[in-house]
Length: 372
Ligand SMILES: Cc1cc2nc3c(=O)[nH]c(=O)nc-3n(C[C@H](O)[C@H](O)[C@H](O)COP(=O)(O)OP(=O)(O)OC[C@H]3O[C@@H](n4cnc5c(N)ncnc54)[C@H](O)[C@@H]3O)c2cc1C
Image 1 (cartoon, rainbow, N blue to C red):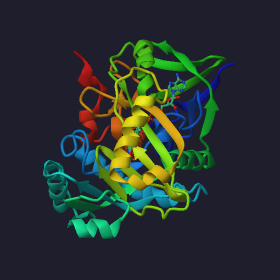
Image 2 (tube, rainbow, N blue to C red):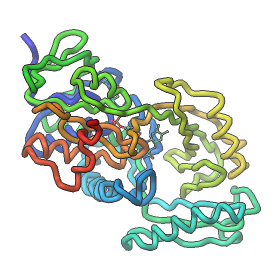
Image 3 (cartoon, rainbow, N blue to C red):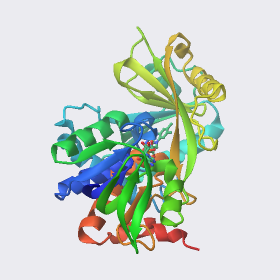
């Protein structure tokens, strides 16, 4: 006999686990099915930056969901931290450093955006002396800097683990398995087929990240999500003082992380489903980092990561009911912002499953926008 679950969520990344969380808050115990381990893909290896004011189509059509999700993060963190998993949420300053006049234009844009945002965000211009005083290890010759305060950061791997621990306490379950198809009856999915066995369900959510092409064939709907490879280097500063801010320059960001680590990010390359770390990306990242902070030559490379962002043609996530289906939902395609957007996406899908309606502000993310 098949196992049963009211709601099956395929994919244990940030998107799937956030859907499980908001379902649990509504009293629905979901089953998350993950084939390679919770947060074993991009959700476990992202930079963990929560920047709601800037990015692809921000400001723009993604702006309102980005800021809403940012606020939702802050609201749920106290509860998630009760799980005992410290995902180290922190409000941060990001300091952009210009060495040429041509690099100042993007900083002026950031300054404008931060100045127009609410009082939680601030930005301050720095001159060469102030930059040197703030961080003497930066390359000399900086002409200007901009310190932007108000973004947040977290360990995305531990954030997803905290979501899972929290939902497990609320009755959700995690099953390790590869989903290979669905069984249907008319416009309803009746069960999710695993490599061994199947799970009957009332509803199913596909939060399969870049691997959403398989769902296209199961449901016969268009889900144009493509992988965008991203690589990062994790360096240990050893005995050197830790960084207390993030720094940007020469095409890289130095993310200050726990235990005195610096994470150098991030590349963006279209390489299909290839997620192996490459010498090319390592050289690009290390080259930029050493130009920005030569002292990193004495730091130790502890990990080189590579994984795939799920991106859509319009850089907007795909959230809602799969076209032509009564009980199959999509939560994918969050691109470079999937950790930030996860609460907004999760709440929207959970609300749609339990109440049947999607907030009007989420309409623009519906999967049917890709119907020809
Ligand atoms: C280098 C880098 C830096 C990033 N930095 C940031 C950042 O600073 N801030 C930010 O917000 N975002 C960032 N991102 C983007 C973010 O990581 C992604 O948008 C997000 O992790 C996507 O989450 P997801 O749950 O949709 O997909 P994933 O994390 O890919 O999860 C999908 C899961 O589905 C599982 N799955 C797929 N098919 C099946 C199946 N058939 N059966 C069972 N399981 C299945 C996969 O194994 C996978 O675990 C970054 C990404 C990269 C690569």
